[in-house]
Length: 618
Ligand SMILES: Nc1ncnc2c1ncn2[C@@H]1O[C@H](COP(=O)(O)OP(=O)(O)OP(=O)(O)O)[C@@H](O)[C@H]1O
Image 1: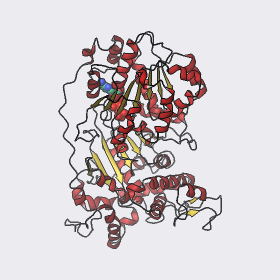
Image 2: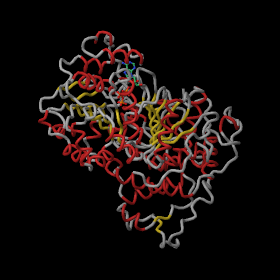
Image 3: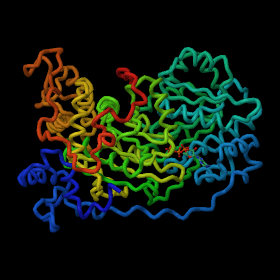
Image 4: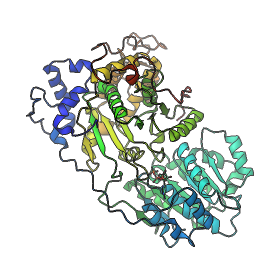
């Protein structure tokens, strides 16, 4: 495998993934790199290398990582309990549906929830990603709906709130499977943004929506109508999936508005909060949906990390931001070589970067390894394109999905074997959820995080995760070839895409100022190097209003339209000569140099969703 036993060869690996000009550089350049990196990472100076690579100063002191704990030993599996034992406690039509879904045994979280003496208790439930929490909250809630006398089917008895449209749809799909045998039917409606509100609302008002799965924004729209509000007077259960997200500052105002339109908690509706991560910050707001004496369940031990044990987590530390795309290319090529049916999700920090990487690796740039479909998923796409991507990526056996965090939580894409995170997640919880897109339902998976020196503090500050620095150079890895393929791909990417990715990078990096510890001028410098890594010969020119909104007015290094000799309203010519340094012919000497494998001759990775992204959806 590509990423193994790094410790002995780390300096070599990092050199291998440096851009062409790094690798051609003299010792002086390497020393310069070391000086640049050490302050970011190591409190102590780097130990002198003692290996055969003595002539190469270790840019990152290996000792920094030696105390990262090994992956925890998997917990002893408890004997699974069959769903058939729930006869008498769950309605026969639910049990039959579970059987049809081939869910013979309860997962641990399902077992814990279904062993509660009372299915109508308020509860806060934590269980690892991919362990069946959806069924764990749906079953007790559906059981209540099916057994409560006097609940009119045209009234919403169960309301599930989820943070994203795709997750809401996925929950509704699972719910429909569970209720498929119920007679009379239990109708599940969905209220999410990006769809035709008028027709969905009309169906909701004229139909029998006993269950509603919604995202907060669209539900608030719905609730502005008195007739819609009247549908909730008999509410029996409210579930917050991804509860910590639903209760964070971003969603809190919307949640409060929704709760104001619901019957008061004193009417007795049940509150259920589920997530793989429950940071302490949520406890002060739990009272909004849970009674003070609610039940707390967890399948995660106190001293255990919330990531799945069966997912080895690796760090691929690159020398510099310029190395990220070539390193990713090399990683994916080697992974594809090892596993021709590779199915991977590659997360980016921003929608624009996800779109850019889709272009680099997909139809436009053609840098993906041969014969692998490439998909994109982010908030800048139309909802139709997003839905199509979800459907197709769920169904495909192999493919690369370049995604932003719209699918970072909750989404269940079967058989994803690899998750790659490019750069920092927005927070520790998001790291856990992204990793959790693989290794689901007991399957195997691996997770890699690709970090630049400026980002390595994430590993240092989160030693609870068993992240191992990666090492072994894969025999098929050819950094020169990867750098060249990426350079060629970047030449085909429209300048506008690069400018958008640059602006998004600036914005995101600024929001993470606390993590980076970077001053505004350093953020701009880093963003300008990101621009260089996209093949821009100068930083993209920005409108001064954009710069003002980001709070970066007057920060040196930015190119402002109408200033710096750049005409107003005209984008800078930043992509005419991409990556001018280190331009070299393809490295045909490596085994993986065939055009078919590396996409030199034709656009590899046929895109599956190439509808033009819609502007500013978020
Ligand atoms: N009892 C079961 N037996 C077999 N498979 C199951 C069972 N329950 C759920 N699954 C499957 O496990 C997978 C993960 O389920 P689910 O999406 O509910 O996980 P989750 O815990 O909510 O994950 P996340 O934290 O990422 O939201 C799904 O593919 C689901 O079909």
